[in-house]
Length: 592
Image (cartoon, rainbow, N blue to C red):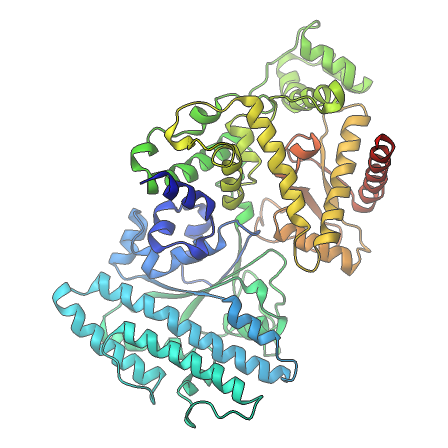
């Protein structure tokens, strides 16, 4: 593979636009993924870029059957798990929102028709994969011919005959086009299309056409009675509340389908259904929160680095198999992460770290540190304060503007991705492909720690700036996050340090709807993470009296340590953060 293909792979990091082979060969399964490979209904939650689309695509049979994993191979061979992936395509979702003349019921009928058609289109890929997996080559063409025509009769009884699944896919595209012409004729004097609507079957109850397709496939290929037929619907955050109500109804009722739905945290808009009874988590479905996956977001930072290394290795192996064995984060970034590495059990009285402790720590902290045993000192002081003291001292040097190497090393690199695959790739690009014309995959030269630190700080600033582009709330969201980060910066550099790190907020009981919307969007973009309980890691806290950690990748921009911390009241942080921001702005004007 040439350098261009390497660049393309690392610059296009959205599973929505990747081929089956790319997704399968670069996929790193987590604990959350295997939880989905069951007959339960699931709602998958995750910030933008957390891998929701890749996870749901991997549940589809055309991906799952190609996955090089013993458990997946066993399920495929035994015909026990057959999934279909259906994206909520922006083109047809948009058409639901640009027809103000329609009644809510008309809108829901159009949604049902569109989703039924999309499910059947997605099921064609499942049928093709099943034929490839379970039919001998010499008989496959005959079974495909029979299956294609049987599905055509079931879905488009007034359409032309087809003799393969490609022809059936083309026919469904024609049905969709005819529907668009029909919508045009409804608002103009044009006469478009025949009187008999080819796609009338898709007006039936939601998911009944794909359920019929499954029954037809069973007549051509045998499956065990306990086979799980999963339907993965991606990006439900783009839908409206009444669309969620309709889908929720099928999570509550008995269905031959196991639903796997994905959306951003707090964007599963409602638990209501079209009946009098709502669905309940733990009974009708389970939440699976990708951002809180225990196999990645553990307190052991080595686990983060191992995950990041695995993701990058698989990416590199896809395009440069000859380079994959050469690559490792430690080879590229070194083995040291100054802010996060193992700390000594004690500091001598005249050591540099003890001098920093005496200079920046509170009197109570210094007194406590001096009476602790070496073992207690390491756990209570050295482990917690080493990185904070280094950053505080750096901030005092030339106002913190001098270049330094503190934000470097594989552990720091992994933490600043927040265990988000898309952010990991973007940060990797910042450090490598975008930094120089030299392709790092063809070089064995380690990146200088000071260069690493500057790139990570630059990446952190871009993360905050990108928040301003979020449609509808960008300006307010950028100001909101910046005010909070200014507060944490001000508290860290202007008060004596203690062993406590403050890097989270707590919402009040009277939180306004407008402020809650900002927090929801911040969580959806991965700028905040709700604190969940150990026993219920997938259950997100509610609007009031809840705690949210700030994203690790925001920390370098403000000279802070990327570490979970104690919460502060939201409005206290906002008011002081806004004052700090105004003060800094006024100082800049004075300089000008």
